[in-house]
Length: 250
Image (cartoon, rainbow, N blue to C red; front, side, top):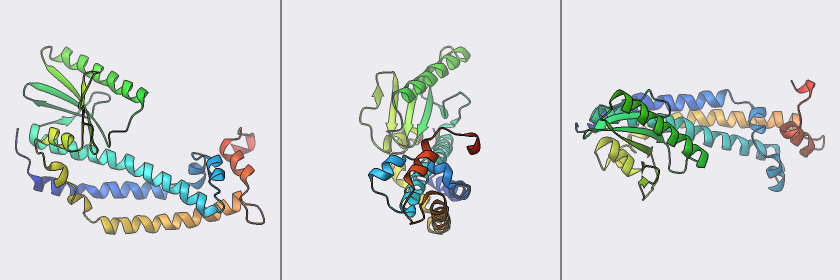
């Protein structure tokens, strides 16, 4: 085990955080109104008394942005966690399906699947994770029969005060996770400041594009899903979202 050089983490963030912002922009640039309208519940819009195209467009766009950012940043944090663990324990990106990180500590091989927060899974997703843990253990025991393997679900933020789970794995969240991969109990605090590197500049660019998208999408919605008197054509919107496709739709 080596001591973590926090300056190397600061440098890593400065050199790589731009990829997160760039992916946000690329996803937003390629976004199409009809793609997000197909994924939202039109009945909910009606029940909430959404009366203007912009209200519906902004609701769809905001939901997309939130979900998209969680996914992109979760992947980015996974890369940061692997980088940090490599500096301290010599860990590596696992080649086993469903496992993100492997490293050795105190004669134990840790297999880690990394998620953003603690509430990432439903019961079927947990079962899938447990299947991946089971398969990984079999693979590692085959290659090194005497190795002790411990499975961990690591979550980059949040809390779970019962780390050991009955299914024979650990769930480390927030401070516990960052300390687990680095040996540094203060790391979860140390990494927050570097993440703001050039954040205002990058976010100004993003929100400028976002505003342009809202304007463009509102015009399209107004053309395609409103009546002549300006009211929303709910039947046309519901038919687009939920109707059985015809040959004219293909």
